[in-house]
Length: 127
Image (cartoon, rainbow, N blue to C red; front, top):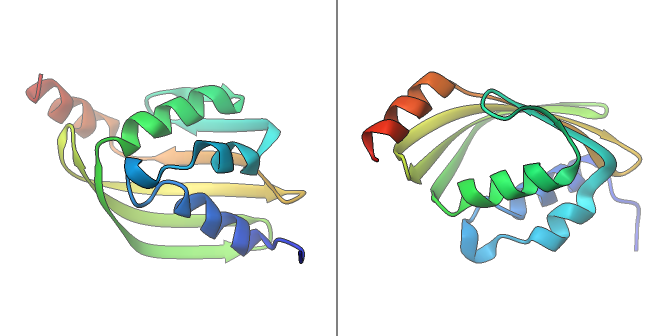
């Protein structure tokens, strides 16, 4: 088997969840994350370790109906993506910016940026 490139790894990351919960691949996802992986997002804050990230992503993917990649930029060991997700709970379309850093063929860090205020408003309205 050949060397996995950063592009291959990032593509595989999105493949583990972009098609919804029926194709969510937790084991494969965990295998891509570095032992010292760190996630940062507007609701969860900065969290070291894969467990809370994987749980949160799984909960999100259960509501995911579609992903539309709008823009991507890959330079060296970093990548940035802008995409829209249609979700069922709270119902709507949300725009996300996601920044990934890869080292030693593992994802070291994911920073997710989105309008948490709008997300919370829609979540409250659906309760």
